[in-house]
Amino acid sequence: MQRWHVFALSVAVFLTFHIQNPNARACAGDTIPDIAEHTDIAYHSGPDADPDRHRLNLVIPQEKVPVATLLWVPGGAWAFGSREREMPVARALARDGIAVAVVDHRMSAGRWMSEDAPATGAVHPDHINDVARAFAWLHAHAEEYGLNKARLYVGGFSAGGHLSALLALDEQYLTAHGLSTDHIAGALPVGGAYDLEHYYGAIRDAFGQENADGHVLGTFGDRASLPGASPTTYLVGAATPMLVIAEGETAIYAGVFEAAVKNAGKADLIRFITYEQETHRSLFEQLGDAGTPSQARGAMVGFMTAGGHP
Image (cartoon, rainbow, N blue to C red):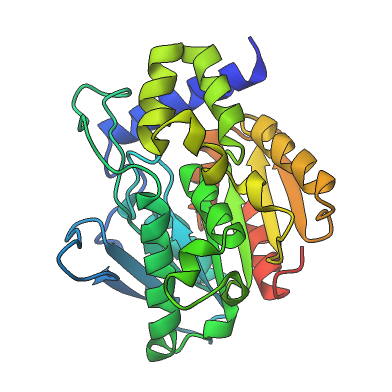
């Protein structure tokens, strides 16, 4: 079986696990004495605000001043993400001295994956617009929480990896809020897909045209929209340091991204680490296991501690 088929199947298992276990590895009521949690913060208000999705949780170390703040975007194929499921990752990073804002955004239709999922939902650029709104909120309110707005990073897992990379590379979303990618100290996309035309082909080859259309085109609108939603499209003008992390199952997507980075002459700005022995699911669980040393989490903390230098 080709490698991207293995990844697609793994993602299906990963998503099924989380859909059937909405509180898997996360309990919203769990607290750790040396961190403070500010939950259910509205980052967008107004007539078009979604009272459930336009929310974030802020996790802040208490024993020392955070060395950086990370806006973290959940995974879930742009359709099943939840900030609550990412709280173990936020807490583990907070124990390492990083403040984390875990953000929800509007979700796409998920009927391609589950009959119980909504048949309609958000379409690009809804997701990335929400992430930009959350970043703008964090930049505006960082100092209220004792955070340094000059040390704001973006990152995310799986679909969140794609969105965090897109925010760091395509300036239009932050420009709408009077900001620019210069306000992002660095980006940490993990386990994502960055060339959506390539991703669409991989899903089509693994699951067929109907599922590829339902999943990828249901998320991004049509094939003509895929290049504009792909981080690989915006590399020529890239100026934000980035550490891209992959595991064995998403290495094919990181490899496509890395080739594009080299072709754009940005290899010194955007670095790559792949943990071949990890699966998509095991890497996610490792990131959130504060009791066990994690190479990936250590690399993320090192990147932010060094000011965005891999």
